[in-house]
Image (cartoon, helix red, strand yellow):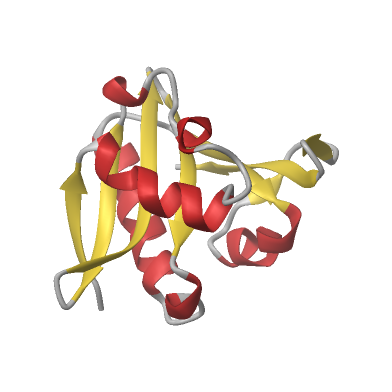
Length: 135
């Protein structure tokens, strides 16, 4: 299993960019409120292989920019990282957690107990749906 650690927002940018938005400039993957979030990385052999950012506002938490290196997907690393973030959201007082999920990843979120709570929408040409979980 991976070693999950707190990281800086800047440490998330390379994976966010290469996995999620490789055709956009690097600045595209920065979030205005990155400084207010909690950022986590999954490490294997001391190499960063997955990242996720958590934002908590009262009893509601949101995770964003969840990215795992393609050669490390489907190995349980993302599941471990998401479970860590769900536990952190609970610890920080959140009663629900949500994300905007790419439609090609919805089975992953469903396996984690999340449910679609919106119609399909697009960010650029990529279809998404909002997924949520009561904590």
